[in-house]
Image (cartoon, rainbow, N blue to C red; front, side, top):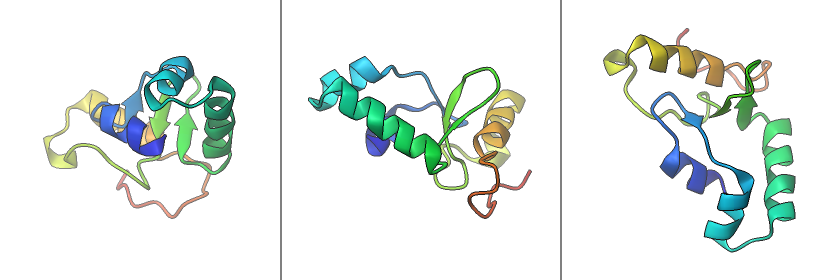
Length: 93
């Protein structure tokens, strides 16, 4: 599931995928995808901001080059690295 998301996420680690489509594409049950999402959020792999946007934690994966990113992408990467201190920050804020 994580690799599926990483392949499809935008620069800045934002992803807009729904669980039903993930389940269909990966041929697994929707309840299983829901359970995996819950687990990934709890482990800090998926980060959800105050606006309910979903990101893959930028401290684990980062899509794009920081020095070539626009301000929106950099903002998304900062949000994606806000995991509540679960991982040592590697994204220079």
